[in-house]
Length: 211
Picture 1 (cartoon, rainbow, N blue to C red):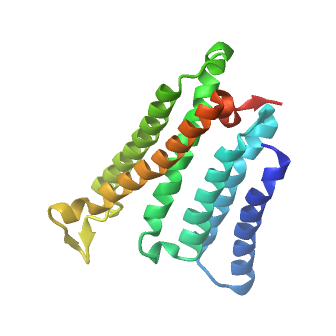
Picture 2: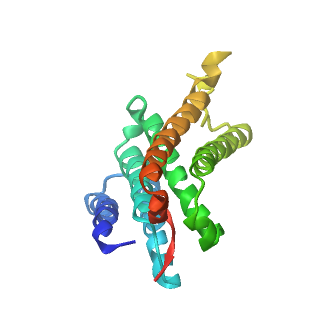
């Protein structure tokens, strides 16, 4: 990851650490909230730490979406209770769709040889990007469904005021999440397709590189 792109990650990291520091000094917030913030800060910094240890460069676009997702989900969503804002969660799923599409391109670069990378098939790559984003979104819903079945956490919002929803109402949260994943992934996929029409090697900016 180039240094000119570091400022956004560092800003979010310091905001999260300051949030914990303020809560401790002022005696506000809960222990669980502070722990969640610290874990979020660690998760945010972890890719950069791994890049330094193993001497590789993280694609800036990938890390931007990653940082944006942590900002929205942990710092704003959990720390400032933005999850209470209608459709905030759906906005995060839009971001995650783009994040997963970016990671799909990074993974493609890691798993293919130079010959394949230098002659990319535009349509195939775009179908792969969107399919990967949707697959990951479905796996996440599997996770929520399993947690709801084991611990009754209501992650899929099938309960309202303690009462089980019926029919389409019970499906709205899950299907809304998947639709948001699809839209986020599709926007990046269409953008990628248009960029590759002008320069087929444009996708290389999403690849990991050894330092």
